[in-house]
Image (cartoon, rainbow, N blue to C red; front, side):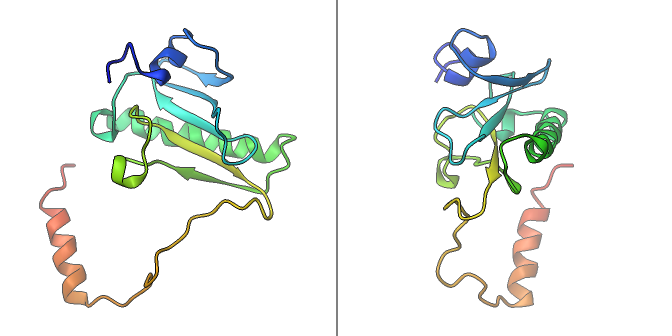
Length: 144
């Protein structure tokens, strides 16, 4: 998908209607048009990137910080939420459906019906050897 076709790029450029909550030179935050709960919003980098690989560390950190600040503002607002989730799906297998990286800020309410569901068998014991093997596999690819 090109930037010209990306709905989030069109929102950032204000070429389509959106309820923008925050915008600066790095990120834009706006209300999700298909909210999971009342007040659900998205924080997106202003520079198009289909996933986190193309988002700079500084911008990714800023997305998280703005998400944190917006979540805290939700708690003080008249939404009446009691908590919030920050959620970022990176890739189709993770549930990403719009391929412009974005962070969900989801207000939470008692009995709102939304939640993270763990698969059957979650919490199974894994050997230290297997955990060490997985850690090493990740560590050799880590670029910091």
